[in-house]
Length: 194
DNA sequence: CGTGTTTGACCCGCGC
DNA sequence: GCGCGGGTCAAACACG
Image 1: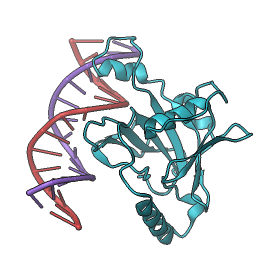
Image 2 (image 1 turned 60 degrees about the horizontal axis):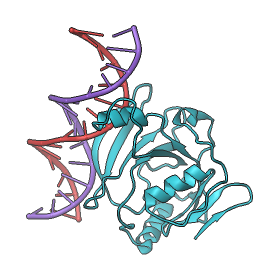
Image 3 (image 1 turned 135 degrees about the vertical axis):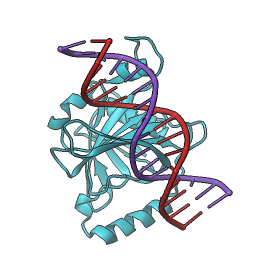
Image 4 (image 1 turned 180 degrees about the vertical axis):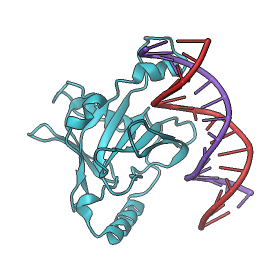
């Protein structure tokens, strides 16, 4: 199900989609986020910061439904940790990882059910940031979705926490949604779906 | 009626 | 201390 290609990219089939990451931390991030085991590591140990986001290549989806992209570690973990009640300077226990995807739709279906609990205007951006929580009982995974102001075709999704359960939607549903989306937009090269 | 969204208020940390 | 910005809460609302 998982494979590291010769070019260092990490490909994994999570049931709903194929995702490609470029570093071991990225693959672990996605493994954590999707609650999967058995990942290989050691390709590229260097983390990529959200501040470098402008220099990163953008994720894309080809006509076979293969999503390619990079995930980014969030340097803002300490601040979030402090807000969660931890002491200043204490390392955050819950990693946050961001994924850039090129998509016309803001909501990328990753197979989990999310409940929106907030939306905020972002400074220096004309697009708001949306906040989502996993609706599964006992699972406190969160994600933020924001469209980049300098590239309106790019959606930045930040995941925080680890799912304590399996994907809640079936592959059949995903395929149904995918075919529906492709029917709507008629251009699968610019539509990203998980 | 259950579930999810909207949106203004609120809280907190940080910088000045 | 104060203002700003990010993040969260919760009441009201919409929808199937």
